Length: 269
Ligand SMILES: [Mg+2]
Picture (tube, rainbow, N blue to C red):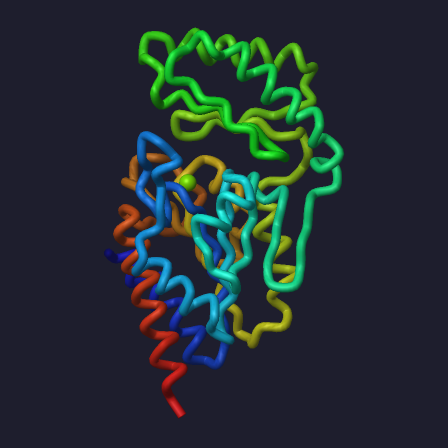
């Protein structure tokens, strides 16, 4: 609660000074609770309403960064005015612009071939799921029997070794994300948004990045000294974020409070 109040105060102070907000957030585990089947991670209606109000405000730029594919992410959030960054920022779209990381785009075919080969190779592990996402592949093992997980990860590691290091693996929560080995992450993506898309916004600009996973740590590091960073979850995990939000409910409370603030501001003469 202490951090929630602190973040809210920092952001609204910027608004009160006539400035604007850049709100960047992860999706799974940040806007929606983690669920056994990622297909079932849906955004509650009231949270979408708050996000939409924020995205439509002339004082706010809203971006959602995720390991999901851009099309999946956009379909789940469904707000036209927002910026979407899929595959850990390798593909980006927003009102009036579209960006694909050129080196990653050049490896789209290899990534597709890898997804096919992994699907066959890992099929003997019951509960495993290979998810091709265009510029990346996610391999989920949340539903693999616990005593098979070690063998499963070994098989995956072996498969990636055979690819002679052209892909990188990012461990996530019961999933491994496989991406082209390019110097780009949610961190570079967040900075790209900050540098390219916010100069038109009114100063002072306050930036916030919220995320719950190891891949968000790269954004926390990139934004050090440039914005407020908040890790979602209990305080056990070491984090480069300066603030903590206890759980998804606290994230929702923050968004709701910000939406109310921006809504009130809009009604002022
Ligand atoms: Mg997450």
